[in-house]
Image (cartoon, helix red, strand yellow):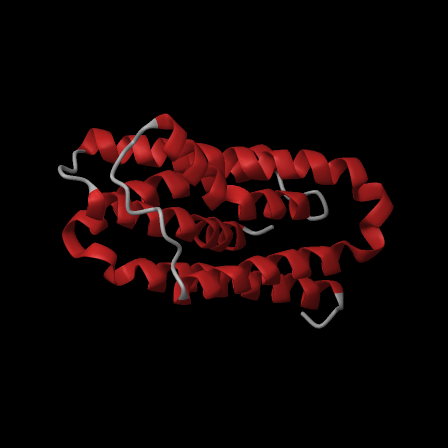
Length: 186
């Protein structure tokens, strides 16, 4: 996987966390650097952990499904991209709580990184150096989540839907690219 592909993937995966971070920033009574870093650590940490777990899972079964791996990667990425596009049109409730309590942050970190678990499964079928890739995804998500808290405190939810829609489009395009490469079109 080329650097630019990994960068697009990292940005696409982080859009859920960015959108929720905007809501966090909007709902906080006072936004500080420390609070933004806490949000970034939760989301960035889970966004790095989940694709690693997905890679471990996918690696166990890679030998059995290598003939259809490109279809699996395509289907997972398109499914996740379409889900993000749907969520951009119909935002979920519950992310507007300004609390940084571990129970709430854990639930949101897991919820925003489920798609990263599925992407991690596709890593088992692609030429990906997994530790640098998941670290990069985590760092990008950390940075965008910190930025999202600040954006939320300044602008409100104006960019939330656009961020999720962009993430969905990026994931769909990466899925199509993977499929077309394996079919010999690209």
